[in-house]
Length: 466
Ligand SMILES: Nc1ncnc2c1ncn2[C@@H]1O[C@H](COP(=O)(O)OP(=O)(O)OP(=O)(O)O)[C@@H](O)[C@H]1O
Ligand SMILES: [Mg+2]
Image (cartoon, rainbow, N blue to C red):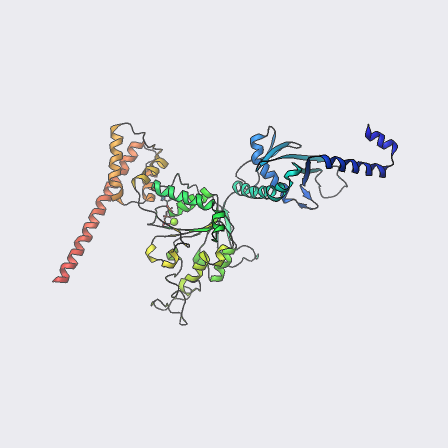
């Protein structure tokens, strides 16, 4: 009625003025304010619109009755979204906000060769005026952060490798090449002492939650792990389990491909946060005995006392131990945050103490030969054996026998996995009996070998005296 009255009485310019005035007047007395977050801002996509969409998808899946469902390329999960013109309420630090997803059909303006979208989409955020500062100062940042986290969670994680050394590729881009990371190892399938496993998990949880702890103590938000032990004890499997647990990408650094310290630095600068930087078999990767000897003298002679180094050998490259130390602990190491450095070796005694000190390698984890608790995990993995399910006396005795021989057999989890894979079609009891025979055989072999060593040692002592 008011509108038609306006139309008949007032001229158009005057009508606009009055409408504006009424709007201002009602805005002045309303306790709400509104923000429109438009999908396309001019010609570019509004990042905040995408972030809100992802952010709301997490709560929409819980509260919504009618939702849109999408699955993006390279995504591992489905994404829920608000349907057109649907609403949702969210709360943040005690503040309630109302979201509406508005879709307006627009008419195509011209006949052009480019198909233009004929929908205008935006989110409207309605908040109480008194909450404006909370929303603008922290809520929107919280949405952006949460969206980045969800995006990372839903995306395939990547395994990077430096196939071009540290130099930029011909396209001037990233020195790292990536493939989707699909390793299925988890802490559940990892065979190791349960206490040790829990200690590592606790350490990883602490690290992830430690943003403010590290910041307040003036430390770079990074942590170093050294995994050492015989081949086949699960060092690489542990790295995969860590990445799967933390949902991090992995940068597998092939040190022998890197020619100079500056290339090493470039590689480091191109890694992202929330990642694990891995150097496998660090003792074989380069000549890194100590800081001084890693420098090559003018005659290309190994300063540690060795002969002249062959051209192109790892030591004749100019990557040095101090370069590697700076990589893990120097000023450059904090150019990103929330990163783990994991080094593996079969021979910890060959590593320079500088590399092992806390702050560089904060945790030294020994991956041992298979123990009884590890064996239980492997039997669960490969035979579907469940602890406590062995009711009959024979099975219980078999289990006790396995416990007695497992340590003396000195077999790695990789060896035992192979035996269990071969016998996985047999029933659990037969597979375990087969394993017991092999363990007993390995134990007696080990005992004989130790005896022979003792005899030869005794003989050499006798010869010395004669
Ligand atoms: N602790 C373990 N838990 C579960 N599986 C294991 C474990 N150790 C070894 N395996 C099995 O053995 C295979 C080889 O293990 P992995 O590559 O992790 O050993 P590694 O310690 O890295 O050996 P290397 O020192 O030769 O690199 C894995 O594919 C896995 O199936
Ligand atoms: Mg390995």
